Structure formats: structure tokens, C-alpha cells
Image (cartoon, rainbow, N blue to C red):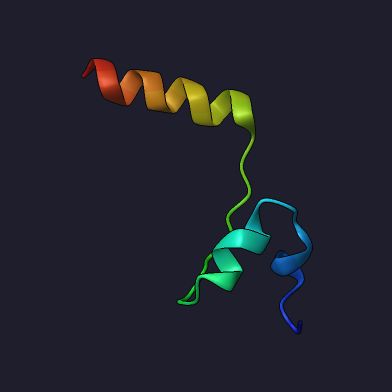
Length: 41
């Protein structure tokens, strides 16, 4: 595979399904707080 995202364990199944995959990294604490604030609004 030419795409390094393939080697992330949870991306292997999605890669086999075909289509285009975009991988984004984020700080879990910031992501979860932003999600909670967005859901409360």
C-alpha cells in the first residue's frame, strides 16, 4: 500500500471497502470538549 494511513489498524477495514479516506489527527481532550459544547448549544 502506498498510503501510510492503511497501516493504522482501524483503517484497514475501511480501506478494503474502497472509496476515499481522509485521516485527521486531533487532541482527544480538545475534540471531546468541543463536541460537548457543540451538542449543548
